[in-house]
Amino acid sequence: MELYKENQLKIYNSLSKSKEVFETVTEGRVGMYVCGPTVYSNVHLGNLRTFMSFDMVFRYLLHLGYKVRYVRNITDAGHLESDAEEGEDKIAKKARLEEIEPMEVVQRYTVDFHEVTAKYNFLPPSIEPTATGHIVEQIEMIKEIMDKGLAYEVNGSVYFDVLKYNEEGNNYGVLSGRNVEDAIHNTRALDGQSEKKNPQDFALWKKADERHIMRWPSPWSDGFPGWHLECSVMSSKYLGEQIDIHGGGMDLKFPHHECEIAQSHACSGVQPVNYWMHANMLLLNGQKMSKSTGNSILPDEILSGDNTILSKAFGPGVVRFFAMQAHYRSILDFSNDALLASEKGYNKLMEALSILKELKASKESSFDVQAWKQKCYDAMNDDFNTPILIANLFEAVKFINQIKDNKATISSADLELLSATLNSFVFDILGLVNDSKEQGSDKLEGVVELLIKLRKEARDNKDWALSDQIRDELAGLGIQLKDGREGTTFSVN
Ligand code: AMP
Ligand code: ZN
Image 1 (cartoon, rainbow, N blue to C red):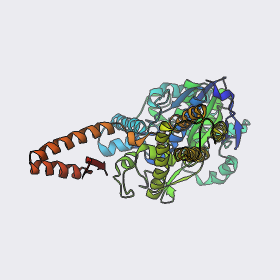
Image 2: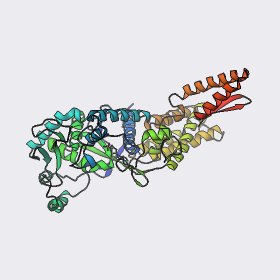
Image 3: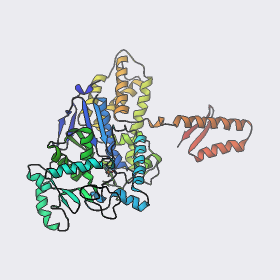
Image 4: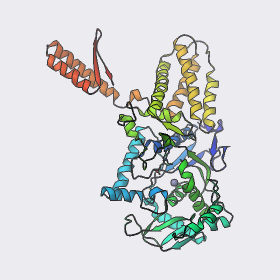
């Protein structure tokens, strides 16, 4: 199925600052690179929102019939504190504080990231390369940039020469819109301390001081690569000199992505990325969710309800629904009330999907299912407009409930089309999961039914102590038994 031929997808390109018709470098094939997590701590819900936006993009591209190679890296070295040029490596710092090896930190949080993304129903990327697995390639790229005369060495460190790059007719600032030359002239006098020629120059290689335990030999010093370099190296290695889509959170636009463009362009002479996509921030208490300020909540805390912000636990389907109710380029405010509201909408949607299974067809439809389907695609084709898509899905929900109440009718062909389309958008594209059918819930049901049976046997034998014990201990686990005329039922809190 090559739906992409019928559907003109438009993507907002941060580079041109406009929506453009999506054209791939190679017909029908998409190369997409997304900056992955720095594995020095658990990902918070903000990080997850960004990755979820690209999971949705990946899913829609696949749905349209593109062959997608999706590369999302793991940053396991080189990302310094506060994204600055100085300071300790985030992973090395964590290792020092916890008195473990840096690679133990990397392993722990990589595993955690994979567990979280699996719980939240992410599709795995096609390739997940690591920075430390590509040190050789990074050293090669630095050599190439030096050969072009666009980098210089000072005291064992190598810096990219931003001013020279711009003097050669390039535009460092093309993505972020920053006027770098003005910035250079204004700040030069203030920056007497640095070994860089200009404060805007950025590190390609840093010499490691004696404290820095993550180090590799290079022609310049025992040291480590600059953070921006890994993405230039891994995107070109796995996707080529020109890739279709490069994504990341909005806060990576500058300096990270600006530096990536300069490095890659310095080597290849071409614009490395056709569509730059940036996902907007998740806010908590009006501020960007961020681990370092403590203003964050973890994906696992949402699933357990174990955080004072939350009144209860929420399933992954509700959280995905909450995230998809906002456009990926809009900021999104997190709160318990917002999740409660999303849960209502989500439950309505899931309920309609189960009603749909039982609906009976009539001769004619009183709803134009074909036109509705096109509206769903139109929404997604307009820069992945998931909030509009969801509004359309709720038109279908309304229609389904009307059919159930005998206030509307649907033909059998339309019933099939409605069911196939709704299921695709809800499960394949938005990636929602039916939380009520979470893995293991049917097993729990079986176990509780067994206990109810044993309790009945105890009661029949007048063993009140055992029957009360079963009821009370289940209540302690949040499972309430209710004795009625039809027998005993249960509910889970
Ligand atoms: P990091 O692990 O710090 O490299 O971040 C991983 C991804 O999460 C990057 O794409 C960031 O832009 C993104 N990110 C960080 N904070 C937030 C937030 N509050 N909301 C959405 N995305 C975020
Ligand atoms: Zn990156």
